[in-house]
Image (cartoon, rainbow, N blue to C red; front, side, top):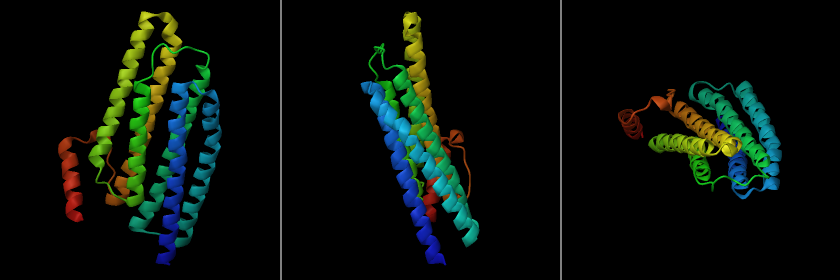
Length: 234
């Protein structure tokens, strides 16, 4: 019975990794399409959302079946129940990539008021955070907690820089108001993607430790204490 459960858990992790790979590609393609004004690529991102939605439903059914048939308790139940949250966060990231792609289509006929620098940077940071969080789930390893917190802060700072710069352009010329507003929206989408990626790592933290912590409440001393305790337990 235990061997069967372990095999099923491994399959779930493999499927979540696949779902994450699709989602990450949607994210990177959406911002690439924005930067290159590639409307056709943006449309493919929108179409791929159906794959993520189908995978979400499939995985929820698989997890529910295991819980119903295996009767897991304690850590096993915590691990399985937590996968619902991870799946949901991935689906929402895909939705936000779709939102970015829709804005690509909206701006297709416009000449950008400035070269895009901070938006691709924010996307890279969000991708890195998502990859890190999914790998933490696969390996059930929270040792990169500090890096997660730093990345989330970088994403927030970059989003603020986007908002400030766009506001300056809009104040300089009212013709920039529509485009500046759209770029602010996209920065906000990427900031939310970072939040969802952080939520995934918070869920992994709960799986590993049994404690839920809002990473917004963490200071450097607390992070050091958590990592020190984790290292001692190993």
